[in-house]
Length: 202
Length: 202
DNA sequence: CCATTTTTATACCACTTCGCAAAAAATTCT
DNA sequence: AGAATTTTTTGCGAAGTGGTATAAAAATGG
Picture 1 (spheres, rainbow over the protein chains, first blue to last red):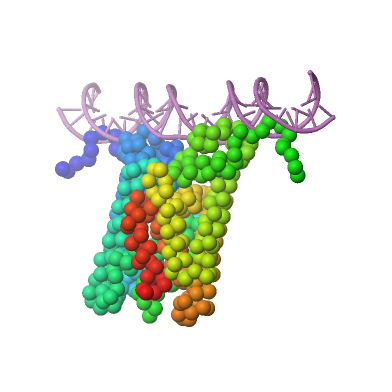
Picture 2: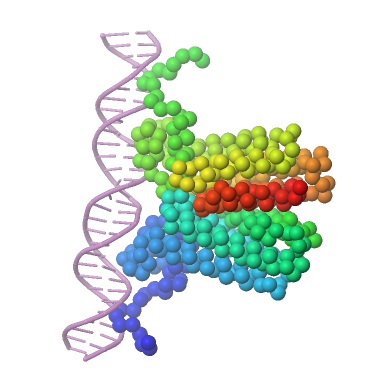
């Protein structure tokens, strides 16, 4: 249990290597990213990359799943049930925007949507991962909205599933528009309009 | 004015060649599509392709612009101002769904979003084309919604720009979800929920 | 100090990629 | 028929592709 591994120690840190690989895929997409670029970005040479993470698609799917888990957890944190609905949703969108606009090459949107959608038709594994990612977010939103109906934050007649779809649609449009180059101001206007429509124009 | 061109006649029809190229890009994305595949799909060999449409990106942008124009015109037709708002929007989404689900390899979503977003960060021309495409649809939706407020189809307090953003968001979420493999039934449920929220739950 | 183990580094492989040059083919004009 | 023009066809070439075999390096165990 205790001690250091036996052979030559690793020169890389898996977490940071995966983060670098993610950023490279994020900007360029899966197909346009070469193993040489991934090697340069991670500082690992190709055989090490291969040994650590498998082939290019396996590496991509690993990165994808980590992004997916992070997104789910961030959403759960933002939507903590003791926080008012509108404030929680506001935090979801603020967190999304700061991710989507954080690229060095300009707005890069959501990793799953921006890079996964392109591969989804020809790569069943990517399509499944994308579908799972979307559904996790749907489920997180719907759970919080259902609770809001139960506690009276929303009118009893409100349909949680329907509102969750719209809340997700708002996220998706932000993801695409950020990647298309829209400014933070534009995106925040869209968020404000969407929140009014979902939570009621308070 | 009149007559046939001078040299050897073309063996291809530009319209059908562009449609075939579009379908290939649509399924596979820009980066994953090779000139050999485009050559096979169009029936033109590589030098002919190159002579007719320029390099791969020029061909892609040509296809993109044609798709964009077709989408804009289809939306204008569906939103004819003499048709009731809800019916017009319903036609927009029905037309979108039949496009988005028409692929031979399963749902393929919107060409612009599904293939353009991936390239938008690294290719400024694609990002600009994508932004233009999105904004054209925004404008079409907003114009019709503004009219609906003026004619009393929507309450005077309704904000046409805000509603147009949500209507566009609905289109975007359909584009992504279709590509992620969701069924027509799922997508139609989302459309129905969205129409209720935008037009009022009549 | 040498064997063992694990990782890194170098070099290579077969294949594909985009793009183009040069030649051949099919048409119109004179 | 022959020249001119436009397109298609063939084939090439330099670079890049994903992936791997082999050798070198860096650690631990005896």
